[in-house]
Length: 291
Image 1 (cartoon, helix red, strand yellow):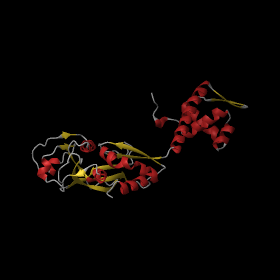
Image 2 (cartoon, rainbow, N blue to C red; image 1 turned 90 degrees about the vertical axis):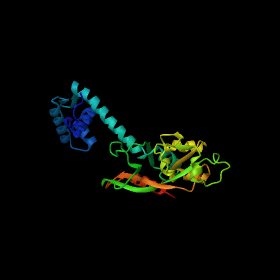
Image 3 (tube, helix red, strand yellow; image 1 turned 180 degrees about the vertical axis):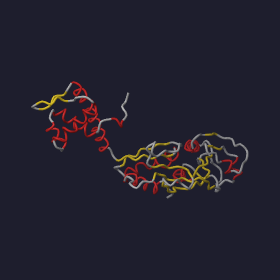
Image 4 (cartoon, rainbow, N blue to C red; image 1 turned 45 degrees about the horizontal axis):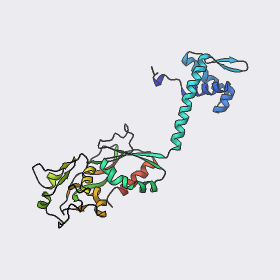
């Protein structure tokens, strides 16, 4: 059974014991730890009283471990070695920042710009968590999130507007071969439609009935289907801007719709925010928002 942490011996006493056990000398341990010999001896004595076990035999020419002390030293030394290794790995690793985004934000906005981010912030290790679930900044160890949400925000959160949702209807130019653009709404109704989980088509077309077409649980999958010429997709302009500029998709109709909620950059307020988090925050505000 694991001993409750509040009942564990003091760390300084364990350090004194571990150094003394390795060196078999309070004086040598004191030199290693940068304290007095008396302080080391006192810490070890306090540890023995705390445990109710004699860890050393005090000899005229130094120390000898008891059998229980020798067994304990092996485990305590291993624990300190683990702490030293973990600390070394932490200090050697680039500063890590965890960002939580939706799968569509990841696929359409973040991933295409990762090389740019690494060039701008070469010492930052970005960890991306793509999920539709809301982030618990503390429990999930998330530094920054990009989410579709509404104001006002709780007092403990800082938020910055990235972009509003302007819905546009898009399709592969191959699907529209021979058609004159832009199409009217009635012409648009005759084409195959691609739906995502948000399903804004009824609102966009002012239609109360059920609309046919393939249904996907993520916007990025619906856009992949549109790119493959499977139909017309409806998506936020920010997610299709690059494909429209490159000609992989075309805007089918001049009709657009501004809807809520908006996309925000969100993080927990802190008086001592890490420099790496600030750097990624500023980069996202500049590069993930509208050009």
